[in-house]
Structure formats: C-alpha cells, structure tokens
Image (cartoon, rainbow, N blue to C red; front, side, top):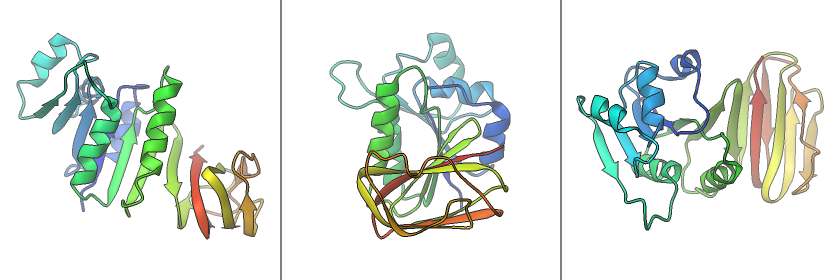
Length: 213
C-alpha cells in the first residue's frame, strides 16, 4: 500500500535518504519550500500546501509546468504553520503510513510545535515516522518494534505525562512495566542488543528516537 511522504522546509533532506524511503506509488506532499527540496532531489510533488513565502517565484514557475495540486493560504491572517497544514491534509486521506522530512531547522519553536501536533493525533492508528538525517522518530502510545543493528542508540521520552507500565526488551537497559517520569532522562541513550527492540507501555505517549549508524 502506498504511503504519504511529507517534506517540510526545515533542514534539507539528503537525496539518498529520500530515495531510501520514497517508493514509486507514494503520495508526495510538500509544505511550501519543501517543494524545492523534492524537485532538487528529482521528485515532483503531487500536492504543495502553504502560503508560498519560502518557495521562490522561479521555482513556482518551474513546478507549475507539472500536474500539481496547489493549496494556497494567505500569509495574514494564518493560524497554522505550513507543516501543520500539510499534516492535516494527509490525515484526511486515511493513509496507514506517513513519513515526514524537514521538521528540524533553525526554528526550534516550529519543530517542537510540529512534534506536539503529531503527538495529539490520537485518532490516527497508523505509523508516523519523522526522519532527520540518520534519526527516525516515532510517537508511540501502545507498542512498537523497531529494527536496527547491535549497538545503535535509541531513546524513549515521555510526552505530556508520565509513561507507565513501560517495558523494553532486547536492549542494553531493559525495563519491565516501569514508570518513566515526564521530564526525566531515564529513557535516554539505550542501545540495541540484537537486530530489533520492542517497546510497550500501558499508559501515556512517548517519543521513540532511533539513531542509525
């Protein structure tokens, strides 16, 4: 089944990284200047969303030669970031897998707000992966099995409240139905002992960050 690819206008994703995640039939939606990142990597977005303040007129002209859906918003007043608008658009389409690039950049406020916006989408029961260079970031409220290599680092960070009943298996520092307090660094810098790690929790929401080699 095809997945949705969202490219925001934060850090420019490496072309080789994009190629590892994007399949031929995937829907590519870009938040404003993220369309330039896609184009430079050899991809034509299916949808471009935003107020177009970070996509140059030249690049807009180049892209308008292709069959792209443009969803434009005024610069003022505007009450959502372009990244949030792109996520909202994708969520309406009922994809089971969403992969997002370009969340991080020079604006920490926008990065944090985007992650928290994703975290509150409790009605979404698919897989939402944020990719930043060699890092994969997922928001988990039940359980997840992540694949990697022995010695790779991963962290589990509670969001919004304490994470209770947390179990981690096949890791250097296993947990069994333990609480990770909100605001604690207890879940930082764990390591794979095998080729996969399973993380589960009984209550709460956690950010799982996997650092690939």
